[in-house]
Image: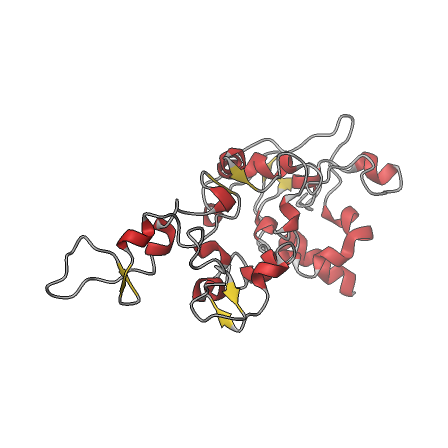
Length: 264
């Protein structure tokens, strides 16, 4: 009974279908209507067959935006939501299943994700990037393709707790500090692009321009408007020496256990 309910959720949920073609969901941003992935000699079997072995994914999947993308399977009322990403599953089923046997795994093949999320591909070709195209990490390292938390472990499409996602690979930068940098508390993406950037270390801005987005004050009356004040201190000449973190000043940009101004 419980298994039947789970199948119904996936099969009906919020799934839309067009015969043998992609459905693009405008709420997820711009998408192209593309042909689904193919496996030579395989045909589509539909969600119910997939769930006989992979029922665990049915619990949270109806709340996942991927549940809105589906294929219609000729001759059956069951959509092929799983196969929209994993490819037609008949050969996989006939072989008795098995990891990677006659089935596509987007975690191992980022191109499958990028066929739909094409707007992200150029970001992975920038100078500073996460090595997804190089095969050294996958989209699934940060994004949950099946659960409610598309961005691990934030809720839905949100980034409210994105720091915990980054912490998996960057524990030293995201650990608790005695003196915190407010930007880190707000989220890593305040300063870093998650996919790729033209600036080193995935930074969103070049040099001290990044810091000045938050740390700049309007000079008071009688003060040269061309001067740059931060924390009531004139930083104009100091900024000519390099970035805020590389000129020997605020080197502990993520936080410090020693100095409240993140000097070290």
